[in-house]
Image (cartoon, rainbow, N blue to C red; front, side):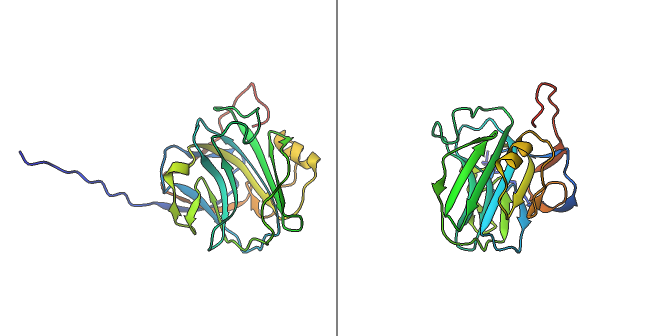
Length: 213
C-alpha cells in the first residue's frame, strides 16, 4: 500500500478589535510561532512604564511584552529559566503583577514583581522609535517572524503602558487593583489591537481567595 501523507495548511486569522477589556483576559493556549497580539504606536518613547498581569505554568524562557524597532527588540519583558531572575517569590500557576520601567535620561531599567522592586540596571541610552508592540512573542524580525521556543503559553490581563514616570505608590495601587491612573500609550480599558492566530479573549477567571488579580 502506498504511503499516504496528510498535510494541513493553516491560514492565519487576524481580528481587529477596539474595546474596553476591563474584566477580560487574553488566553494563549499553545506553543506556536504565530499566535500574538499587536498594537501599533506612533510615539517616540524616551521613558516607559509598562505593567501587566500574567499566569503561566511555563518553566522555559518566554516573552510577555515586546516593543520593537525595524532593527531589533528595543524593550522586552522576558522570563528566563534561571532561578531568581525575577525574584524568589516567583511561582508557577499563580497570577503575578509585573511592572517594568526604563528612562533614556538615566539609561536605567527596573523590574517590579508583585509590588517588590529589583535592582536598577543599565539597558540602553537612545529613545525608542519602535512602532510595533507585541504580546506573547519575541520579534525575531520586525512584526512578523517569531521564535516558538520563546512563545508565551498562559493568560495575560490588565496591560497598561505610560510614557511618563509613575510613583511607587501608583505601582502599589496597580498591584492591589485600586484606583490607579490608566496608561496613556496602552490602556486596557480602551484598547485598539489585532489578534493573530489562536489567541482567545475571555472573561477573567475569578478567585474568591485572591483580591489582586
